[in-house]
Amino acid sequence: MQADYVIIGAGSAGCAIAYRLAEAGKQVLVIEHGGTDMGPFIQMPAALSYPMNMKQYDWGMKSEPEPHLGGRELVTPRGKVIGGSSSINGMIYVRGHACDYDYWAESGAHGWSYADVLPYFKRMEHWHDGGHGGNPDWRGKDGPLHVTRGPRKNPLTRAFVEAGRQAGYPVTGDYNGKQQEGFGPFDATIYKGKRWSAATAYLRPALKRPNCNITRALARRIVIENGRATGVEVSRGNKIEVITANKEVIVAASSLNSPKLLMLSGIGPAAHLHEHGIEVVADRPGVGQNLQDHLELYIQQAATKPVSLFSYWNIRGKAKIGLEWLLWKTGLGSSNQFESAGFIRSKAGVKYPDIQYHFLPIAVSYDGQTVPEGHGFQAHVGPMRSKSRGQVTLRSADPADHPKIEFNYMSHPEDWEDFRTCIRLTREIFAQPAFDEFRGHEIQPGDAAQSDEALDAVIREHAESAYHPCGTCRMGDANDPMAVVDPETRVIGVEGLRVADSSIFPRVTNGNTNGPSIMVGEKAADHILERHPLAPSNDQPWFHPDWESQQR
Image 1 (cartoon, rainbow, N blue to C red):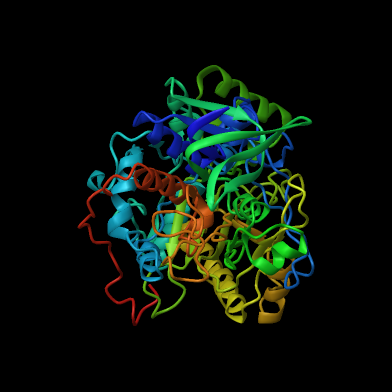
Image 2 (tube, helix red, strand yellow):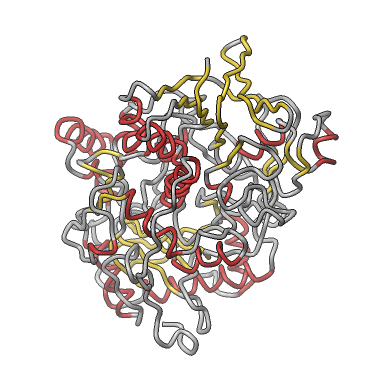
């Protein structure tokens, strides 16, 4: 089995690359370990909590015991399915802030500034405003990826944005447009009542072409001969074979599996590879380092009126929602229920938002399985730019073993201060008049948790990953010893090999990372095809005029 370009991973970036290469007439083969994404739990937006808890769709990885979170092992879902994590995520679509990408460029990822990447976001999008505001000039109009808004009919969903306004924060009609800062409608990768994953947007259209194929197998290692990647060793059942790449191998296996594959192939920190008896092909100490993520906490409030989604939290209610969705792709089943968002700054002197809110009109457990107290609502909140860094290393030289994942969450002292600020600002928002007719007692953290020490205890026990791991094959200048890929996504020190997924992020972007991962695939495809990048944009983002002296 062979192709000109072999892509490892049918996830967010891999699907986009396959689509663009196939569109250009190249012979493409995608390797994916997971199976079909056609099950209703994936396709129905409201069922989003199910697929990430199903072995059929998830790799089943966990972090090592986190020393600053009481030794807890945190689940780390990654999509083992066509579409990758875009098939099991919450479908929330966030580009990230302009300053995120300017930081990338300044840190050595030349050509990846906001002006450089904005045209790719526009190319990939087909945006629908849903009557909720925004400027279409800032958005894409005919890309493969449909981006929509929910109906926002629930009074709690509307109250959240109004409460943000009453607290003195801006309101924005489109946080993915000119102004990210403020409260407003969430964008989602949902279209016509169904999840619009990277598989639906990119891979399926690509597979309709005769020059694009997919094969189900586990990638064991990249075959490298005389300093050049020539193929991928895979296993299918008990059989091991090599798939030949005539031109390039492109690794798009996630921020957890991509560094694992590089290390199994002899690319990584030399001493670590020697520990596992792996011959060193390229000593790249940055492989597996720079692991980042977003942590978040649920601030939960009881509701005094029966307006939350708890009314449907029973067999009859769920059956009704499911039946309407199955028949017509309408109703509550057609939304992820994350319909209002907030991006704010934690204090004066912070130039752009460093706190994100996901609002949900129900108080529900982290795994989406239990409701603690009947009617309620919650905001998921956390800092966007933690200074803590972790690593991904090999557990063994066996490709079947999961990598060793050490996020090292909350290891930087500023993280604790930032998280406490998140909690206190959220309480202030929930205390606004917009919630007066709905607000009951605080469920979590609970009214008794007021001191720094008490809040730290809540954070230590209840903070969870937002599932945005990235950064483990950092993109940077080719002369940077800790960079893994250059600004054209080529692995430094090996010919014919690229990495293109969230692992190459120099720093985690604001908000959810699926959109930026797809953008990486879009831009990487142009580099692979040796095309001139799209012309930089002249659009200038909005900043709070008094950001240096005011928090809001």
